[in-house]
Length: 327
Ligand code: CP
Image 1: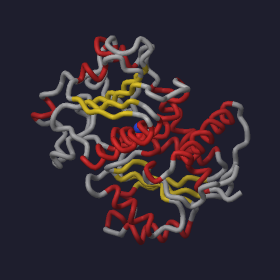
Image 2 (image 1 turned 30 degrees about the horizontal axis):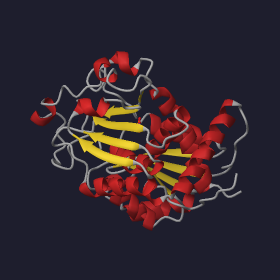
Image 3 (image 1 turned 90 degrees about the vertical axis):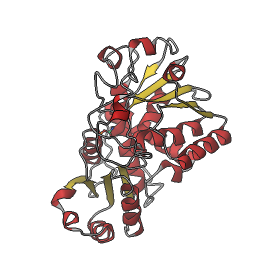
Image 4 (image 1 turned 90 degrees about the horizontal axis):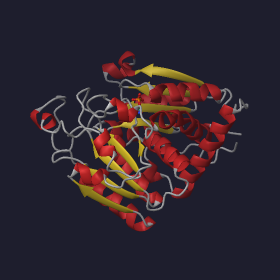
């Protein structure tokens, strides 16, 4: 496999053209077939990726670790609380040092107002690609896997009705990076995207304006509603998921009066019955079962969450193979 994008940072999909994303998707599809057929895919022999995590992870960490192993390389997991970062070492120095030891640096840093800037500072000082494993604003690995999954189920995405819907959860104050990535990416593939949320859970105005621009350039559409039921109505894909009120309230408190006033924003069978008969239910996971979604929906016939999660492996491998490889 040719490393077509050797050295290119993967911080947001906005910095990747549609044709480049199409190559990432085609490569993911090929790597998925190769994995299922037990084919040799050792495109990253002797290559090392550092995997830095400021937060917990199940899918992202393990798809990256398994992925680089399957590509013939080595992933080194770094808990940042055990690094000199915890004593104040800068992103610049960390990036300069790690990039002199390996071939890629991947990082999750979701601290509000910090995460994306941290990744940018690493990118400015790294001689190897920086891969965003989720920051305060973007989760491009998730967005790519979501798009791959939608394309597997719906080969034609033009005017597909996709609703990204806020949902009630109490587990932690989640970043806005998943819905923000989706509203920017899906309109580029001609989808009719609805963003639904209760007052107080806004996404940044610049992201809304960019989503509208992406839609107008691609034949898709983008609208906002505060009416949950209208977002479910006739939808082909629903993505009900919690995100925090970071834009309007930077407190790290998880449960507050605003959140508690929106307990009814749950994905129920009644909501699913408003959608297209063939609707697909998606969620980046982890889901707050019982709060965000009823078990009968996430475990039911409309759910494609495990296919979506599995595709995290194949898309992660495509990003690494195309940006880190050299043969
Ligand atoms: N969807 C996702 O990023 O999952 P993890 O937080 O488990 O990595």
